[in-house]
Image (cartoon, rainbow, N blue to C red; front, side, top):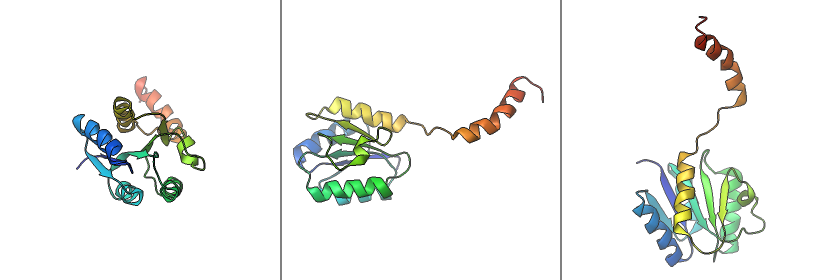
Length: 144
């Protein structure tokens, strides 16, 4: 199984709209109505994107997301938050880790953000690039 998208929404209608659109676009989607289950699926699977619907969330679910962002988010995974950013969730303000889509559910925009998460490449550390720059230049100039 390849990378999947995990969708959490306490509202079954909103969650099903998002999940159906993502499936229609050919993506492997897992839909959850409990935040703990969704976060567990992200840790245990090859998830590149977590769509987290904050509309109608309980305070405990938001705290679970905050703890998850601090300690358990897999490298390369992104969170797409639906609804208004909740106060006290610093991870929803981190543009590299999360994209917040306020307002009503926009399935097309959600698909675009998920595709961005799947296509995002990790940037090599600057130190590694500097170490190999001289070798690359010598090879390019055919001096070796």
